[in-house]
Length: 179
Image (cartoon, rainbow, N blue to C red):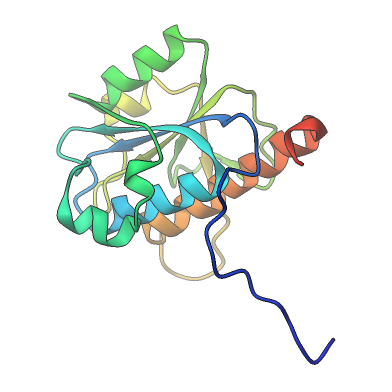
């Protein structure tokens, strides 16, 4: 390793990908504006197409969300839906394959998922998970591998794992997407 490592400290003037990844994120009744802001940061870093805030999920403009999002709430398109089920119905009508991210016993590991694009990933409430009526509408359920005792991890961290896995698959399929 060299003695001097150049660290990128400034934002880019333009995104590295010309077009957004064909991925939407559905946030189904998240309680924490900080978790929501974290998802905006991840979505912007990956150039995710949009976020849909459902139910009581904090949506921009929101001061706590903005604090964590650090400007990403102004860069990632966000709409609201009354329920996660409403958002899923809309996305399916638009041709998305909708994946629930949940700790279901019959879920496909995110490591094994061969995503179909455009794709949408539904993330649920920090304590309650995805609403049953929303879960029933999803095309498939994916989970994160767990080797410890706890059943789940923070929703923002789960979003990072799932969205980076999806981005990796998209870029691998469409080499022209990565500059």
